[in-house]
Image 1 (tube, helix red, strand yellow):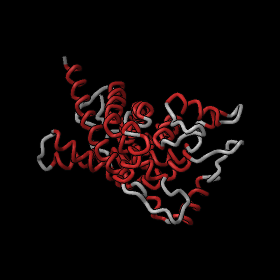
Image 2 (image 1 turned 120 degrees about the vertical axis):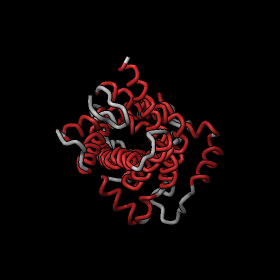
Image 3 (image 1 turned 180 degrees about the horizontal axis):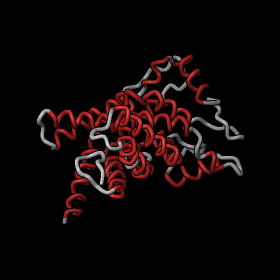
Image 4 (image 1 turned 90 degrees about the vertical axis):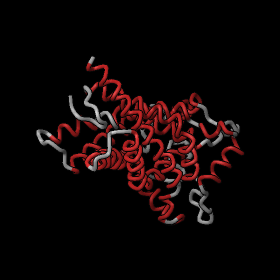
Amino acid sequence: RVKMVGSYDLPYWQGFLVSSLAPATAALFTNPIEVAKVHQQMHGELAKSAKSKGAIRTIVDIVNTRGFRGLQAGLQAAVLREGTKNLFRIGCYAPFLDKLQGSRETPEIWMRLTAGACSGLVSAYICNPLDLLKTRLQAGRPDHTGNYPTLRTGVQQLWLEGQEGNRIAALWRGCHVSALRSALATSANLPSYSLMKEALLRRGYGDALGVHILSGLTAGLATCVANNPVDVLRSRLYNQPLDAQGQGRLYASTGDAVRKIVAVEGVGAFYKGFWSHYCRAGPHFVLTFVFLEQLRKTFAGYNTV
């Protein structure tokens, strides 16, 4: 039994299980904000004259266009993605950190950052098709018939977009950008939660809901600052139209996307949707870590019976 993210020591398999359940549950509540964030990031793509839209204006436009159901676009994919990706992203953090820490009583910061980056990379490469599907569905772009994608049609479209004999590989397009995003996010997220919580506990605060909420908000802010630029890149690459050869029509590569966005929209474009990102990430990580702490407490209680 080893120390993981949270206050209770659990066997690894239980740590993986609660790491999946907590974020999947949180996604039920925070998906509408992420939908708004993706819409903001796609707004004014490669257009110098386009003015950025605020989160409230974006939400109103989504409701006017698709109704309130539009705010839950991609919900099934989001829950599936959160449950699957965090099985590895949060679940792998403890084994990696345990290996790096060795016999030391307390892990050093670089160990926490490295463990977070490694678990983020593993989760991103394994779950890239789910990330791709979720982002497409949340962007909510209608097809040539004017219909909005569903989970089924989204999967079919992704499969058909790949060239014959190369369709599996096509599901991993944009995976390197996604892996960078995940590594940055996880190396910021999990260590910042643990460090903030440990600091509050040292100051005499009880290991209770208030500490979990404040630590979760801090983790969300650190995550957004670290990975919003890569998040914008990923949204653009995932949502760009493809030609008959399966190549992007707007961006030839990640480097090409960076150059074009800077040249046309300016460096500030990489922080498009930042507050929508934080308005989603803050509550999402609060709920995730609150659920995680409670699940760990529950499992620890059963283990002692």
